[in-house]
Amino acid sequence: MRRFVALMLAPVLMLAAPAAAQPQGCLTAREAQAEQAVRHGVRLREGAWRCEALGFATGSIAAWRAAEAVLGQRFAGQTEVRRRAFVREFENGAAAELARWDGRIVSYFRHRPLGEAYCQRLADKLHETARGGWRAFQTQAARERPEIEMDHRLCR
Image (cartoon, rainbow, N blue to C red; front, side, top):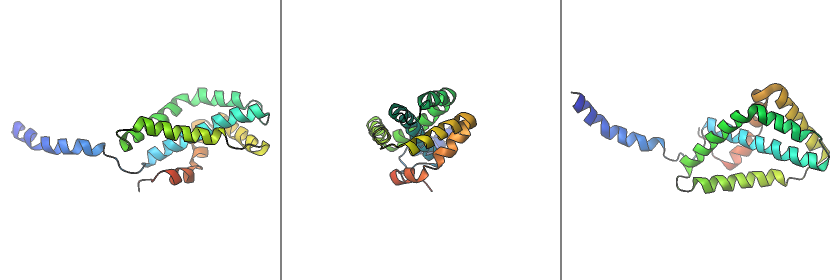
């Protein structure tokens, strides 16, 4: 009887396994949240470096490093969720697609025109993250959702 059940379930399981890894053509809510977190982290990091270099927000690099030290494992987890989504969606070229998107995002924030007001808001976000931890960071990142929706389709 067990043998019969195993033989009957084998084809079903074989068909179900590849379906889980099939491209969906969209990001799940968790993947979209990870994309938001990655982008917001890049925004804070690149902004901190540039604002400090321009003299608009002294101490912003130290504030970023403090946030990264506390939230580094969370950042790594979100980066991994994002990487797995790219592997699913771009089966044969995931690494190249991920590098292309990362380069685009970093280039955008690295070369964005900055001013004193932008740098002050960025310093405020870094201090808010230092006080509120991961929850404060996620709240800030969630405000960037329209940016994610312009680049990726979200699963409904």
